Amino acid sequence: MQASSLHRDILRLAVPALGALIAEPLFLLTDTAMVGHLGADPLASLGLAGTILQTLVGLLIFLAYSTTPFVARRLGAGDRPGALAAGVDGLYLASGLGVLMAALGFFLGPVVVGLFGATSRVSDGASSYLTVSWWGLPAMLLVLAATGVLRGLQDTVTPFVVAVVGFSANIGLNALFIYGLSYGLVGSAIGTVIAQWLMAAWLVGVVLRHASAESVALRPGRAGVLGALKLGGWLFIRTISLRVAFVGATVVATQLGTEELGTWHVAFTLFSLIALALDSLAIAGQSLVGHRLGAGDTQETRSVVTQLIRWGWWSGAALGVVLIVASPFIPLLVTSDSAIRTLLIPTLIVLGLAMPLGGFVFVLDGVLMGAGDGRYLAITGVVNVAVLLPLFGVTLWLAETVSLDAAGIVALQASVGFGYLGARALTLGLRARSDKWMVVGVEHRA
Image (cartoon, rainbow, N blue to C red; front, side, top):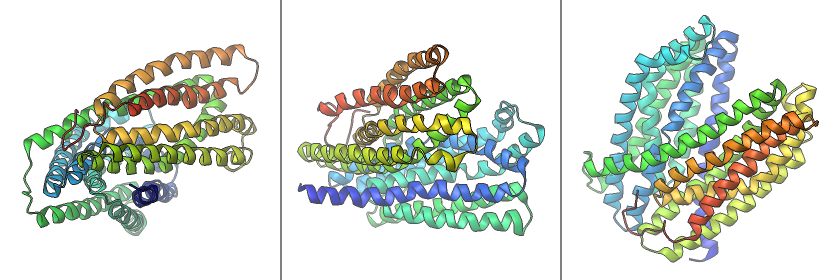
């Protein structure tokens, strides 16, 4: 494949994926602003309920990541009906998990809210919000699965359009129920649930329309559902390892002090925004690698990986340079606390220096997910966390022994940016250099 053609394929998939990834946090910020005008308690309740929902959905993101390689491999092998049958299986798995999680949420939601130790007014508001939101959980998971199907079909435009229209409708619905009908915080939940089901219906309808056009039976296949669940299980373990790493970093930042915790929050928020841009390349990698392996072309698969790695390095480097150049000015925009401003500058410089490594890691994550190499990702995810944990101890030791005020938070950022990402880069890079993950055909090892 010519490099120019491959570059076009990467851009064709990555740009709409980036748009969809950015759309969600932007519209969620608008929702937060609407609730914020209701007062401090409703805003705190939304924050608490949102943390619970986002954590749960984040753990189930494998519904998108596991569906994409199944569909892409069959499409690459020239079996479009088989690709859509795998997609239908993924939708059944998502709906089943959605109903199960929603049922558990109705019973366990108040207990989980109580674990946070918020005031009674905040806890009551969060519980009321969740009581409504659980009805939208199956829709949220169906959106993930259907998005994974369409990515496997080499279509990232439709999820982007649905995201923009759906989140725009969410803003209008929330304004109607929060202010127009005076439902307050619960109105935000009602509007969001309606928007979620509209998005799910749209995306599932697109998948089912493709399936009907290929005369694919719209009933679940036991082998397909179990296969997606198996790969999803490995990716679930990988996701847990990521959560442990970043929650652990937040715990360390808390022990360093209030200013350090505030600094870490800003730095991690910026890291998360940069990760969205780099994740668009990972999504392109999932789709392209799965498709090429399904076609049985390992040489073209290797070309895809080579080009994606270059894109990852250069994109990470460019974003890192922007972050370093902006490091003296970003603190002025995000906080008025002079101590946090002082700590942020060296922290952001270290974060910027680590971004090329981040681009490399995110791209290879997508490559191995597209290959269905979930078991390796899960096992090395645990190994990488084991590398990080001792670095947390070193961070706390440096904070106590080095007289520089920024020693602790800079050491923490370096531990995550170079220690954790470095461990991931090593494990992912060694795997990508080998041919063990390049299993051709419609099946993979997971």
